Image (tube, rainbow, N blue to C red; front, side):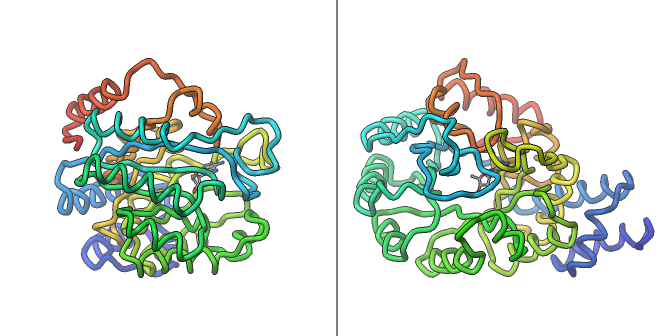
Length: 340
Ligand code: 5AD
């Protein structure tokens, strides 16, 4: 057990060297001492500000299909769930939403779906090309799961800039339990393929998965470092009632914020979204204060957002995309940030 003084010096060391062992990380994660935690957050904020200043990056996400071939046990849109209506947007609808988001001022468009192979290499390639033709300076991020190398290569040629594919958990046994028929090794191969193709690759994981320990979380953070990820989506696990994990406990918000802060200390230049899973439960301001620098806003129409229920969350859509972005910019301004 490290005492308060040792933990405070450890934070200084991590902020200066961006290095820590798994043992040191889990000691900090387990710490409930408010003085230590506040210091951790203040140092994470200082590291973030040294890299990004007060800028917060705003992205638009289009959830274009909730059809999925996977059976991930935590996920509400897994193929076993018979209780949801499945939808698949035609290319024209995806493009309409993307153009509207660009017109509303968003600089990054994230295209996300379940692992839906009916969107072929060529179909998605054509969508990417059209978005890039409409707005060459806008970044296109894909998040459509594990696909053959040739698909990734084609989409890169079409202009895709970034790809999100989380490792979800770095523990091999837990990974296999949660992802029937899938392996962590295959996941990491996909991540490497994407990086080799020149994508900015985003990973991430969930906090509070059933059976997860502090040591596993430390390994999750170290894996991000090892893979040199450009982005990391880190959010609390939220049990979905239509999954086999319905009765499991929720991930802890305070712990998730500590994970964010430590990630910021160890990977100073990484983009860290204040994930939706985190902000529907905890505060957005807290996540930003713990080192997050990205906010994703849904550009999916409300009725489809409700069907894209990875985990339960309220969907209320009272504003247009433009108003939503403006409200966020105003809110960020009141917190001393500049939304871009
Ligand atoms: N709780 C929290 N996050 C979840 N995700 C999937 N299911 C859940 C859940 N029940 C996250 C995963 C996935 C991303 C799209 O959402 O990390 O990569």
